[in-house]
Image (cartoon, rainbow, N blue to C red; front, side):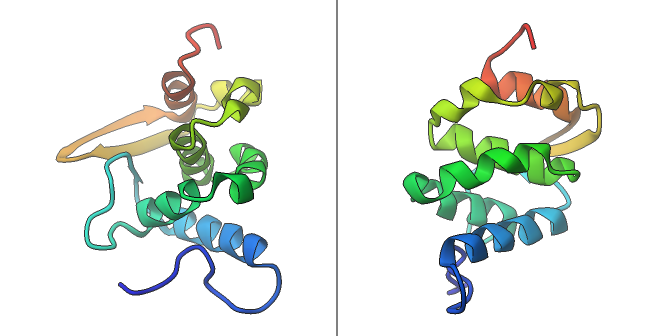
Length: 129
């Protein structure tokens, strides 16, 4: 693709621009891709991977997105924090575990639909949530 998904514009704060770009990409996604991206696709996975490479810059900006109204934005934020091995996963908002919006997930050639709360429990390894 050749695009820089971490710093999509040269104006303003590059961290905020990258987070705004991630939110837009994740909102446009049809599903959450748990597999590594391939040849720049899907965009949601590419953006997540670009944020993972710089946790010190993006980690604190992802935590508020766990409360985003879009289940895909919340799920990609959670997955990105998980891939960062973030300690922020210990303070995930409890309301995330209660969310029941359906979430389409793809891992390789397998696809499934689960609710966002179940995905959050799986990612955080919190069976009591």
